[in-house]
Length: 77
Image 1 (cartoon, one colour):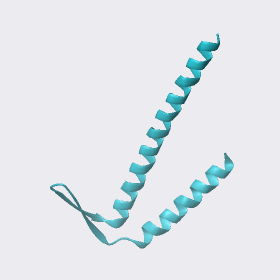
Image 2 (cartoon, one colour; image 1 turned 60 degrees about the horizontal axis):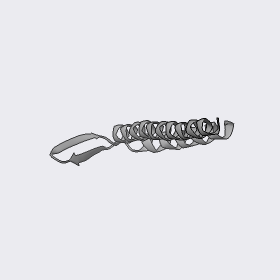
Image 3 (tube, helix red, strand yellow; image 1 turned 90 degrees about the vertical axis):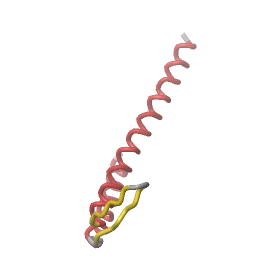
């Protein structure tokens, strides 16, 4: 568990360095929308979206695994 915290801390520190070095404006076009934001904001939003989607997907996988374990235990009884 401690190794995981250290690895996440290192990744976040490196991400912080990258963000601080990239402050120029960036234009993003999605379908008909054109968004212009500083690159720092775009990276931060991307990081948050990635973290949230990773947490959601891992919790869904955990629930699926837990349900299969419960079914196996029910069959044994």
